[in-house]
Length: 94
Image 1: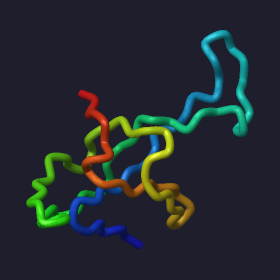
Image 2: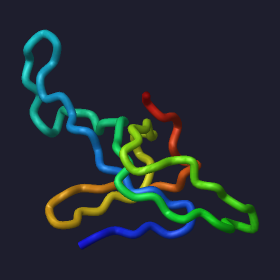
Image 3: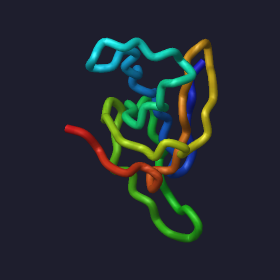
């Protein structure tokens, strides 16, 4: 199954969280923070959003930073994705 975002929406896949601290302590899943770095897997076409023309500047494969509690999380074919508006993305990573 494939996700096709609409308007200014972007589908992100979270980058795997580090499970071991620098000191070698292994963190259980409940103690790990949600990763803020994600990879773009699909981008909507843009267009009019609330009467304003939105041009999409992201592309598939970009690494981005989002807020900890941003977006809508879904699970599809066993993979977790987050859907956000382009304006919810804080920065890109080069």
